[in-house]
Image 1: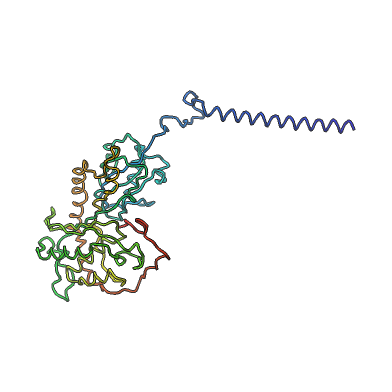
Image 2 (image 1 turned 60 degrees about the vertical axis):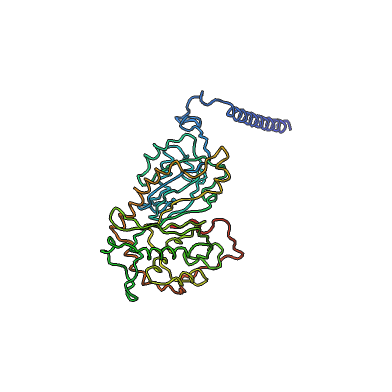
Length: 412
């Protein structure tokens, strides 16, 4: 009996000792956690060769929402948007931002952390004269050093502090694109049976007449207003509310000569937003109408429920010219804290870069490769009539247009 009692007492003592040890361990852990809150790690020795979080190399940098003005020639890039394994404008931009510690490594891997947003997408080969992006950046920025590390086809011209909730895409209330092409593209067909392009040797000598130029301008103006452009993109149904777009202006410049002696014009279109391939198809159909491959009745039918076969102009001459922030500027541009996003101070630099890097590339490529002439030779293959293949899917039930949504600003 006494042995049983002794064993019981021993077990109880062991349990008590274990409990006491657990309490002591918990108290040690609590003291350690409290100590971490006030200890000055700068006075501590480096442990195991690892740098502390407050090492100057890891010093926390305060970043604020900013808008950046970007120009680039997209000739050798697979578009603006980052695409793993592809050479894109954003990939080049983020690499240099990381190098200069404008963004963190986490933000480089996942740019949403830095609240990055572009005003408009551009596809392979398409350039931008005045692209705007929003992103969180530090106060101390060296633009000159930053641009020295960028490829010569890309330049960052300005940074402006913006409101905390600013979004480069959502706050943009209009976009302007230009399309530069040789005037020989509008040369009329020789006869009804001859719907092919002018011979290449005529490109350098052709000059558009004032009457023919007026016909170009009148044709472009037919696009202005709010219309249904489901035929000018892909996989859009006529009943889809997002197929309706508002074109504010569609104009044509006076003719001018390139350094190679070829006559060009620049088309300019301003709209609230554009769908994928919309501008190139609008230009393609306008060229076909002016040349005589089809008539304005095709354009009128293209804006109705019919599904038509329409040509799409080459991407070479397309440039994102300007993104507009009139509403933002009216509300915040004169509040004494923020500057309007008009970039007037940078305009001279931007214009010089655009002429040297973007337009010179368009003139040179067109003179050497004759992209437009090759494309014109395919216009007679299009029926400009009803097509039944590749029917778009029906819109979702109760579909509603909400801001800039599906395929918005995806022009090229």
